[in-house]
Each structure stands twice: as structure tokens, then as C-alpha cells.
Image (cartoon, rainbow, N blue to C red; front, side):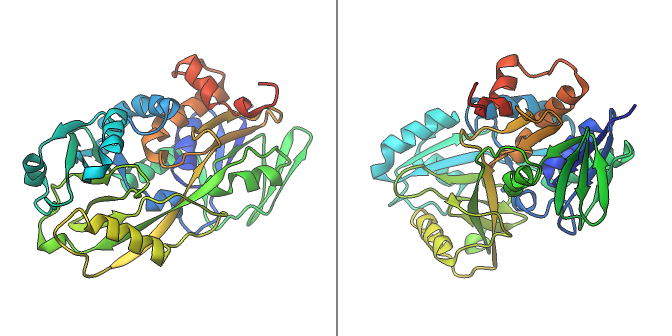
Length: 362
């Protein structure tokens, strides 16, 4: 008998899981908003860097790379790390962490002509950083899921979850029954768990804001690399091309309750000021701004797999800022676990991703 799998959450986590699981199960996805990919998925910085995140996240990044390359989802961008004179220690640490190669200032300014010689004391570059076509990826997974018979329901906010014997009863815009629930609810993951009577794992949504401004000084920014400030007490920032416009983020991580996030004007202003210190072109106009919630588990690795105490409840949560670049491997792992196949990921990585790592007995 084909198992009925209900996935709560229509972001990249839930939609990619639906695509991978649907060949082996009857899949329904419930998304509370009027379109898939509305929250964190629709507000992603859309970049791919293999060496981003902790060791567990990086294992997923590397395992996802082939899918991203073969499905033509990546385009060359490169990344330029910038630091002020007093930030040498942070610069050195970031270079090592991110696999960057130090450049002279003139080399860096050839890439980005607006760099400020008075403040940019150190620069480093990594070539294999890519733009990621997030919409193409999301819609591609959705197409595969539907072709496999999956049903994707929008405007379907979950109101209650009850376990009756071996069956889950879910009330949303209509009633559903499922043998297995997959919690891919992003910032709302713990709320869904609580509704289902499952122990919370302590997810924390973190706000990140973004500003879109005109291309600095009228330059053609389409070939400029992703710019990134170093991680230190002065605060980090990043900037990147967006279809000929320029995105600047304060790169903040402010704890928030789950909600439809919006940018904080003061935080944006501080981030733009940090960015302006490193360039010669001032920010003269803000075209638009927004924010998203990047939701982390306590150890900042994804949580993928069967709940430690409720076997018919699976987690697909804690994507943080790594949702798109880990989705191919994360969704394949869930599909393997549900089908009882040996995972394609190494055993130690599977264990590091498992919800059981938060169990008191673990």
C-alpha cells in the first residue's frame, strides 16, 4: 500500500522533498501563503559557496553541487572579501574559513572600480562562488513533484494536527489524513511540532534585511563579484548584483518570533553606512527593502529525518541561510530514509543531521 506523506511548508525545503519523495509515496504539500516560496525561500541572497556553513552543512553543499551544475542552476560570480586596516585578524580568519586568496588593492579595484583606497586595506578573492537561479530551482522541483502525482496546496494554513492510531488527521483549508508528516515549515517548525504533540527542538528564526539601490555611479555591475565585509565587531555586510541593480545587506542575525518579516530601517541604515565606508560612490536612493527569517537549530546544522520519539513525524528544518544550496542533498536524504534505502551521504553526516542528536539519551 502506498504511504500517504503530508509535507507542511512550500518553501524550497518542502518542495524539493516532495520532488524526491513522490516517486515512492502519495505526497501532499500544504503551504499557508498564496504561493510557494513566499517567505525565506523568496528572499534568498541566491548564492552558492561550497565552503559556507559548518562541517555538516558543507557536506550537504558538496553533495548538492552536482545537481546544481547539471541542472544549469549556477552562473559564475566570484566573491571579493574586503577589510579595513584594523581588521587584519578577522580578515585572516575569514580567508582561511572561506578558502580565499589574498589580492593586492589594484587587482581588487580592477574587479570593482568603486573600492575606496583609503579604507580597503585588505582584499581576497574566490572564483568558484556562483549565483544560484532560485526561481528556476524551486519551479523545477515543483514540476517534478506534480509530474509524480504530488498535490501542492496553497492558502492551506494548518490549524490542527491530531494523531489517531496510525494516522495523522490534519485540519487546514480542508481535512487531510496522512501516514507520515514532514515538517518543512521553516520559521514555524517548532509551532508545527507543538501542534502535533512532538517535542520542540529549539529553532530560532533570525532576521536578515536587504536593500536594493541603483547601480553605484551608473556602473555596469552585472560582472562584479559578490562583495563581503569581514566578520568582526564592526559588523559585517555584503553586496551583489541583482539584474543590473545593487543589493546591500547589513547581514544581521536578529532573533525574532516567526512572522512575515520586514526590514528594520535603523539596521538597514547601519549596514549601508558600513558598506559606504568601503566604496567611493555614496548611496543616494533606496529603491526598495525587505527582510527574511533564516531559521537555525541550536547547533546551526539542518535537522533531517525521523523524530526521536514520534516515528511518523519527520523533520526537514533548520536550513538557516543554506536552504537552496543544500536542498538537493537534503531532499534526497529524506527520500532515502523514508524508503528505507541506504543514504547516499556518509553515515557520520546522516547522524549529525538526525533529530535524535537533540535527544537527552543521545
